[in-house]
Length: 210
Image (cartoon, rainbow, N blue to C red):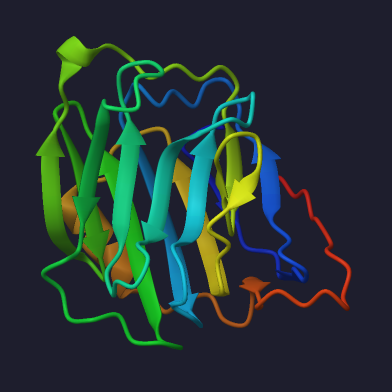
């Protein structure tokens, strides 16, 4: 993967489609990493996942960026400590102004050696310490999914809106680096569009690696 991987090609997904890609084995969720993307929410009728990194078995999301059901803030969750569902680190942007519909936000999740941090538009909203005694996450050849989460071998929490400029680093960006990244214009007109479910249109799946 090198220092980063970027997904910026435009494609449309209909009928609840998603974008999937295998991450290289050198991406280690037990070591520092950074995940960043631009997101626009078009609806709020259910829990909506903009990005998840999943187990190879596709039975659970190990890292999840989402908007909770009925809420107006971003949340990130990291399963830590094997398969125990109780060992989950959660950070959110509850203290920020309510997320507006059809507005762009830059969301960044940073895992450094000590803490998990969530930034929105360059501002750090919450961080939580990493309990190393809980043990490492278990994920061989993790898989990236944009627009939905994995739960019990099925897709759930479909995103309704747009996702652009997804980038993944196998290092932890510092606060000033996140601020500079968030200060750039969102990469219009590229992006991934996830419209509301339309049974009359066929889902298309794109696999793209840069």
